[in-house]
Length: 216
Image 1: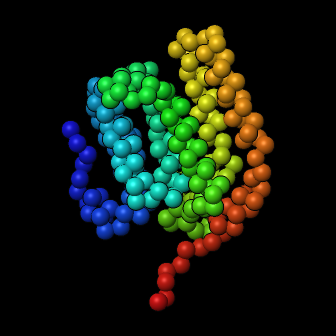
Image 2: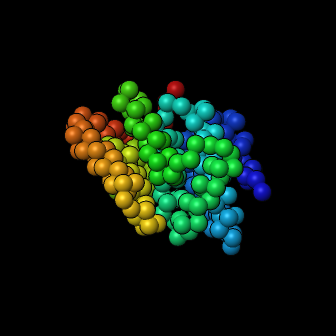
Image 3: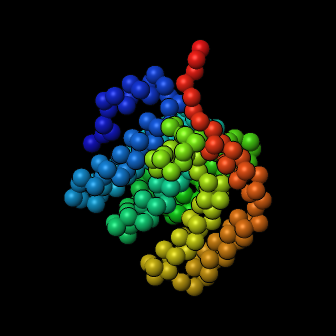
C-alpha cells in the first residue's frame, strides 16, 4: 500500500507552500481513505499515512503553525477518539516498539506538536488566515478561517486532559493517573493565565480582511 499520487504530487512540486493541498490530502488519507478498509490495522495504516503526509509539508512550511497544530490534532483526536481508538492506541505503541522509538502516548505526542505550534506563534509567527478567507465569516467553510487564539492555545492542555482520561478508561490508576491529572491541571492553569487579549484582537483584525485579487 502507498499514498495516492495523482495531481497532488504535481501541485506540491509547483507550490509546496499551498496549505490547502496539504490539509485536504492529509485529511483525505487519515479520515476518508482509512474508513474504506474493513481491517482496523489497514485503517490505522492510512491514518498514519495522513500524518506522515503533513509532516512532509512541515519540511517546506516549518514556520507555519497550522501544520504543527494539525499534526497534533491527528495524533490526538484521530488516534485517541476514533471508534477504533483502543486498537489504534495499541497499534501506535506497537509501532513505536518496532521502530525502537521512545515509548510514549499518542496524546503526549499530540501535546508536543501543539506546543511547537504555540511556540511559533509566541515567537511572532501569525495565526494565519486560511485560503478563501472573507470578511463574511458565516459564509466561509470550516477550515477557511484562522483558528481562534482561545481555541488554539487550549489544545495542548486538552491533550493532557484526554491523556489522563484515557489512562483511567484503560484501567490505569494510582500514581500514574494522579501524575497525569496533575500535569494536565498545571497545563490548564498556564493556559488560563495566558494574556491572549492581544492575540484575540489580532485575530479579529485579520478576520475582517478581505482577500482581493492583485491588480498588477
